[in-house]
Length: 346
Ligand code: TXA
Ligand code: MG
Image (cartoon, rainbow, N blue to C red; front, side, top):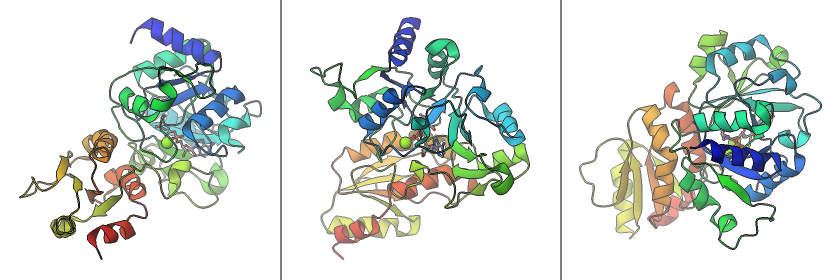
C-alpha cells in the first residue's frame, strides 16, 4: 500500500466521499464522521436503516475527549489494554458530534483499529484529527467482507465501469490490505451507563468477556433490552443468500443422507474429519477459534456461491473462546429450521 493511495483516499474522505478500507476485523465502508451528508451516503450504499449507529474509527493519537464527554476508568483501562485492536467502546457522545453517526442516540461507538493501512488512513485524514465513521463494507444484513475482493463483489453494481462518479453511493476508493487477520467484527462494550448498568457486552468478538474481566475486574453483563441498539444484534444478520443450518456433529451424517436422498445439493462447513467426503461440497475449517474466525466469512461467501440448496454448518464448541463465532453462526442460521425441513421433504 503506497503513500499516494492513502493520501488520495484521505482526500476523498475530506471531500465527503466514501472509501472502503481494511481493518484487522473486517473491511469497513468509511466516511467523514463529522459530515452528515457523507454518513447518509454510507446508509444509502449499504441499504441500512438510518437509525442504526455507526462506529467511529480513530487514529492511535486521537483525542478521545473530542468525541466523548466522559471516559470512565474502566474505559481507560480497556483502551490501554486493547487499543489499537478489535474493541469498540460505547461512550456518551460529545454534543458537537453530529447525531447522524449514532442514529440519534446520545452515545458514540469508538474504536482504534490496529491494521497498518487503517492507521495510515486515519493519520492522513485531517492530519489524524478526524474520525472515520465505518460500518462493515457489506449490504445490510449480509456477510461481512474480509478481503478487498469481497467489497468489490458486494458493491459490484456501484462500481460498474459506467458508474457515475457523482452518484451519491459511489465508492471513491477501495484500499487493499490483504485478508483481515481476525475475521469477525470487534467486541463491543457499552460503558455509557457505568454507574447504573456497569459494563455491558453488546457484541462478542475476538476479545473475550474473560479477557475484558481480567483487565477491569468484572465480567461484562450481556446486553439487555434497554441497551443501545446494535444492528449486529438483530436476530437475522451476517447471512448468506443460501439457507444456513447449524447441525450437531451427531446429527450431521444422518442429515446429509436425508438431504441427498431428497436430491439436494449440500455445502458443508465443518471442523472434524468425516469418513466420506465426496458427497457434498465441503470446507474444513481450523478447530481452534482464532483460525476458524479468520476463515469464517470467506468460507461462507465461497459456499454461498456454489449453488447449493443449503449450507450445513457443524455446530462449534459452546465454550467462552468460541462465543463470537457462535453468535455469528446463530444469526447466519436464523430461522432456517423450517427451510431445512422443507429441503428434507418433511
Ligand atoms: O470490527 C468492526 O467493528 C467493524 C470494522 C469495520 O471496524 N465495523 C462494524 O460495523 O462491524 P457495523 O456497523 O457493521 O457494526 C457496528 C455495530 C452496530 O451493530 C452498531 O449498532 C453498533 O456497532 N454501534 C455503533 N455505535 C453505537 C452506539 N453509539 N451505540 C450502540 N451501538 C453502536
Ligand atoms: Mg456489519
